[in-house]
Image (cartoon, rainbow, N blue to C red):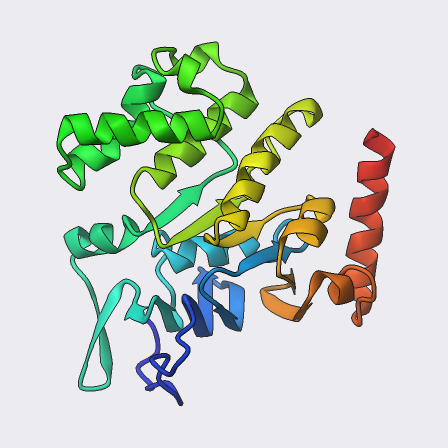
Length: 274
């Protein structure tokens, strides 16, 4: 249960950020993996979250849509407290049904594609709109086909995931998340499980979303994507954000030694693969 202290300021001030993270902490047993993180993401902004494995990036992402319960602090998406209701200065966890309704507004794409192997591509994309939003089937199918067209996979609508490449499966996963009409998209290293030659096709879809003004938080090691597409980069280490700012500053002129070391290692590894 998060700490019960009320925040110093309401996130409802104008202009209201799409995401507000206030003094968030998360631990697993005796290990604290998120150590008092504060973060804001504006509507329409694309934030790259970078850092070494184990720095807390993916955990923070999962906390934002309440896949992980936080131990202290507060998280707001579009002004709404995520996962909890506040009464009398105390937080009470929402029923799972209400959490699922909130989560439906936050699309998430994981490292692994998590597609249903027994369903076709089209069935994977329409499943949540039919079951969660109770959309009419014809409407769900029409939108799904438009999304599959957008990610370049309309011709694969009747194929099963096992017959697709990794890059194609990840593009289906993006279309599936978009089918719920989310306000926010979270990407947890969406290209890390892909062969190098398949990475660009997924990043191209993400660039298109950024061009359309979708608010996105992207956990990634793709430094070129962070530099060229993202509005801001935040570097995490040991459960805290050490520095953040425009890509031209954080990636080209990092202030912290740990940021410089991380970027040198990642960029060197990527150059070695080319």
